[in-house]
Length: 416
Image 1 (cartoon, rainbow, N blue to C red):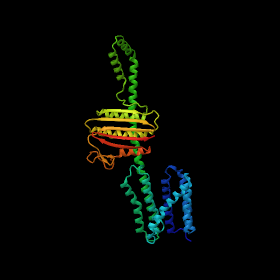
Image 2: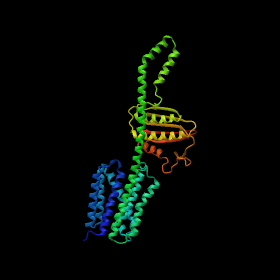
Image 3: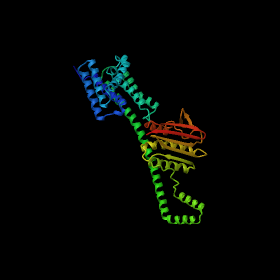
Image 4: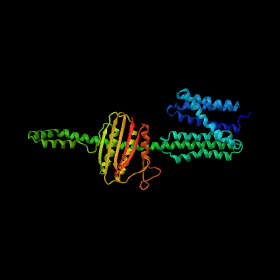
């Protein structure tokens, strides 16, 4: 029997792509239990070789099915879960191509692409991408519903092109099928790269913001040290002056002198001093910007020194909320900014309250940028608040927004 035929070549291509889809499905269910990538690659490659050999030499539908089911169940045991769970996941994953086969069945006699299961693999890929997006919707920040529909058109369009153009088993059909699979792989590689690039840009923006905050905090520390140095230098004179007031029994004068000495020590650029470097740096930097715009500042921070929270996460939440507040303050006649942060029973509470020039628009319970706003951008609107929500979910937290003229409020909780 001749093994190297166009039909067998199409099947091997489809089979390789189908095992790639199995790999993607598996990683949806075992996201937190991934094993090393080379172990996965080796396991799926061996499973592909076994199934392909059974197809080419045994010509038995039962053995062919077993050569898929058994390796897939064994591969699932690489993730160290319960036996029943691993078997259940393997069965759930196998149901998808079976259903896709049933959907493609009416076209089997019409196109070799369908008969060799290439269309089934592409349709399985379509459902795999849908499952990935819904299971990780909170992680995809750059890709929204409309973009997802455009991306999912690729496997569906590939099936239509293959069915309409491939009528007989020819070498050209094998080349066409290979190109379609490569196009699908490239498009979805770019899909993943797009979201990864978006996250990296956000990280860079947060890092830049954090660097500015740290530089501002270093300036505050330097100024405080200078003031303390001057105070130590003049301490003898200050003590002599206070002793003279005390001898004169001028208690009101002594009280005023002590108060003025305390004011001279205080640094006007230091609004908070909680002991947490990230929070202090960011708040002192952002509140300094608000002060420059003429805002009335109220800041209350009560948190322990060793607060366990990733610095990028706290910068993301606080930075984006403060950026929105600063933008609103610039358009308000009366400028008031209040921020309160406290930690109680492993929960971090963050509350911001600021005046607004105009009432914000709400989409349900979430504020959105008004279309009348000169800076309105449909593609990017609300990205800051989406980033806040995304970060809070990592800590099983949530946020609530409200507006009571002229104050806009945001209250967030993070479980640490």
